[in-house]
Length: 282
Ligand code: AMP
Ligand code: MN
Ligand code: MN
Ligand code: MN
Image (cartoon, rainbow, N blue to C red; front, side, top):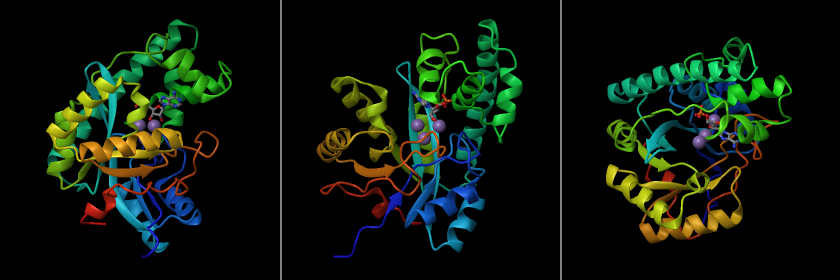
C-alpha cells in the first residue's frame, strides 16, 4: 500500500487572521513537506486563486476551502467547506453578508475596548487586518498584546475577548443550514471544524452533529492543531459511530502563535474514511 498523502486541510492567510500571504503560506506548507493543502480563510474566498497558483509551482495539490462562522443554539461553530466553487453565487453572497456583519461587530468591539481604556483599537486592527472586510478577534488580540495588556494572544482571549469579558460582543453569524447549504450547493463537502473546541456535553455534541448531518454535513475534523491525541481518538470513535468522514488540519495562523506549523499536522488515525478521498476536484 502506498503512503497516505500528508494533508493539511485547515489554515489561514492574510485574507483572514493569518499573518502570511496566501503565496507565502503555500511556500511554507510545501517546505514543510505537505502533499495536499486547503486554504480555509474565515468567511472569504479571496485568497484561493493566488494560493492555487503558488501551490502548483511546488507540486502541492490544492483544494479550495473556507471556514464559515455559524451561530447554533447561542454558540459559535465553525464549518469548513472543502472543494467549494469560488464563483458560486449563493456562497459568494452568503459570505459577503457575513463579512458585512463582521465589520459591524468589529466596530462594536473597538468601542467596548475604548470604554475600558484601550483607545485606538479600530485604527490598529485596520492596520493588522490586511483584508479590512475580515477583521477577527485575533486582530484585536494582537492589538492588546502590542499594548502589553497581557503577554500572549491566548491570555488576551481569556481575559478580554471571550463571553463574559469586557471586549466581547454577542453576534449573530449564519445559521448552520445556510452555511452547509452554501457549501454543498457550490459542490463542496461540509466539515465540522475542531468539534472539541466548543466544550459541549456529550448530549449536546450528539445533537449538534445530528443537526449538522440533517443540514448536509458529512465530515468532522478529528485532528486539529491544538487538540490532543486523546481528543483525536475520541473524535475518531464518534466519526465512525455516526458515519462521518474525517479531516485533519493545522489551523495555522502565525509562526509565533500556532502550536502546529502549516503542513505539519499529524495524519489521520487508522480506521476512518479520509474526507479527501471523496473530493472530486482534489
Ligand atoms: P472571530 O471569528 O473574529 O470571532 O475570531 C475567532 C478567531 O480567534 C479564531 O479563528 C482563532 O483564530 C482565534 N481564537 C479564538 N479563541 C481563541 C483562543 N482562546 N486563543 C487564541 N485564539 C483564539
Ligand atoms: Mn482564526
Ligand atoms: Mn475555527
Ligand atoms: Mn481556523
